Image 1 (spheres, helix red, strand yellow):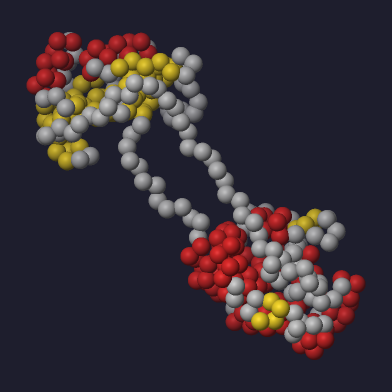
Image 2 (cartoon, rainbow, N blue to C red):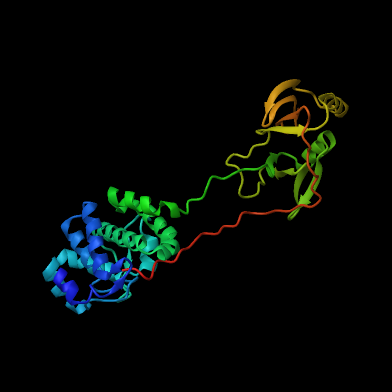
Length: 337
């Protein structure tokens, strides 16, 4: 096989890391190191014979398949043809998504479903090829490292343990995995209530919240930098909690007025005190709390820090927002055999 590669110009064809022949030998060496069977190793050595979707420089035509099969065996040649004919833009996103992997032949445009062993061999050769290319071309590594890390992470079950470890070792720094979410506060919560206007009256009259109307007549209660959105039981807006039930909530609200003033206000409004004032532990440390129930029976805890933190500005406008859904797409390498 080495003689054929040299005769077809692989030793004179430039490629990251020297010549195409150098690259093919390194790929075959990697596959041997990973414990690939002889057919896969032979296919790795010959994978660029018909050109590839990333390196359009064929050393022989597909009309010479019988010649290559005679040298390396029919299965190895079939793997070379599978690798060469792969339409990467179509096939790479399908790897690792379960179900049989449907390949598109870039030579004919037809789709077909290779056997699971052939798909695993394809993935192993792909990993060896791409790792060698990126190891010898930093520009390609920076350009395609993240995309390929995603491909090999998603299709890790198709790779041998040695190949998986090599991919992570070389490409792990390009990981696109997002960091942990950092929650900085509570924007709003939703209460399901039997009577929206009765709830609005209670929270406005007793606790000083500000009624808000937004959207298409939706009702809410604003306080500090947060709000409570209200859903009427039986007419909840989608999406909603799995079991929206009036009276199932347990709220802790922070105030900057003394507990004595809290008690006086509750008495003036005719609201029974369930418990308190009593010492409790809040999110920022010790608090003193008084407990009551709203018209639906929700447990409401009114807490005071000492000294009390500032409540923040009272919003004067009502806005709604949703996090953008921005799926990432990545181009596949187009300069590697």
